[in-house]
Amino acid sequence: MNQALLKAKAGRDAPPRRGRLPVDKFNARRVELAEAALATLADVGYARTSLREIAQKSEFTHGVLHYYFSDKFDLICCSVRYYKAKCVTRYDQITATARSREELLEGFLEKLGETIRTEAHMHRLWYDLRAQALFESAFRDDVTAIDKSLEDMVWRIMSRYAALGDKQIAVSPEALYALFDGLFQKYLLQHLSGDTDAISALQSELRRLLPMIG
Amino acid sequence: MNQALLKAKAGRDAPPRRGRLPVDKFNARRVELAEAALATLADVGYARTSLREIAQKSEFTHGVLHYYFSDKFDLICCSVRYYKAKCVTRYDQITATARSREELLEGFLEKLGETIRTEAHMHRLWYDLRAQALFESAFRDDVTAIDKSLEDMVWRIMSRYAALGDKQIAVSPEALYALFDGLFQKYLLQHLSGDTDAISALQSELRRLLPMIG
DNA sequence: AGAGAATCTTGACGATTGTCAAGAGATCGT
DNA sequence: ACGATCTCTTGACAATCGTCAAGATTCTCT
Image 1 (spheres, rainbow over the protein chains, first blue to last red):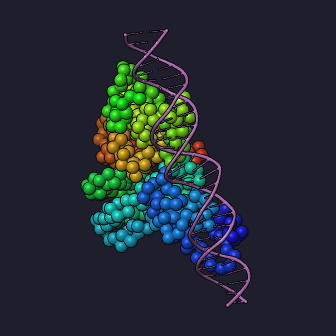
Image 2 (spheres, chains in turn cyan, purple, red, yellow):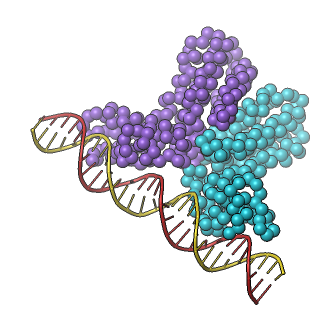
Image 3 (cartoon, helix red, strand yellow):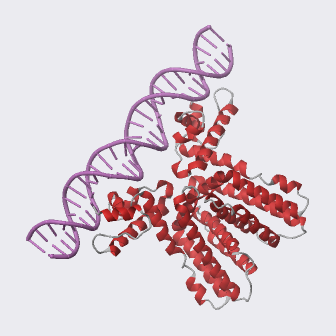
């Protein structure tokens, strides 16, 4: 067992220094296992996520998790950080290319509906982890950072939308994100409950709302 | 062991028929244990709430929980329903007595700050349970009902606020609740993270927002 | 090819979990 | 006061949990 590695694992943020060379291979496997952890979290929720179930979603056995992570917490924290990158660029394409308010609005709503339809489990993972941060201080910094980047994402979309209409945004970034997030969470629950109209209800709610805000 | 009781426990909603008389005493103890469950959920979160820890917060031992509830799920569902009644009347007093927009706004913000300061653990319990409902369908009906009654509560406050200024509310009840809820959750996390300015930040955010909405 | 390091599997450990059965204690009608 | 019923405790169970150590396997470099 590599002693330098263990030290790196203990400190939960520094990139691990390997004895030999392939530090990328090591990190690649960490990411691979983090993805398995995210899949498990999305499937059964934080409360019922176990290391053995995570390992079962990877191509390894449960013992390997303690080779790449110091403990369960380290693994889940790493997964949460990895999750962050996947969220925040979802609407950048449509924001950059849309040439009218209508085009931006409809493109955004289309993407929004699609992500609820196809990634609902990933989204509920996020709300679960954010709730865990209310109890577990080790999650708070990461969760707050993700929240902030989502807020920024929403603000970017709305800024472009307002600019296309030569308008000003009427509310603060916090309030805007709170509004979007609260609505998203509500209709996500409806969608997961089997309500087939949930997505279109969210879309028409936002179609009414956005012109009022900016 | 009472067979009729067991049957009542199996069906998770019907009021249990007892062999003898004191059906109220039976329900009173259920409520007592549900309160211990809520205290545990507020303390450690859903993921780490165990029956033994719940019993430890009551004056009984863990075995009694299976006398009053068919299983852990039944207990937590019952606790969630009991929780509902405690939330929705918090602002009724100030809504009824306030004689001006200013008085209502400041009274509301005062109560809001107070409940974050003194009942933060209870509030995080709610966000945890609502996240669990995204995974566990057995929670969904209760959670949706509680969400609705909170939405109604917010709408009542805002309606009164708008009426005192002879104005109309500019948004839908869903959007209004989403906005309040999203902001509340954000600043609750800040408050629990040790940010002593979180409450006043929420208050000034709402002070700016409410006059715009109605 | 062979030595040594890196990677992964296996199996075990102590602790904790939900559940339940057996029985002790309390309470009630008679 | 006694017997029946309700209430609660105790202790056990099988399962599952995170963790870790020992060893098998694979990879890498000379």
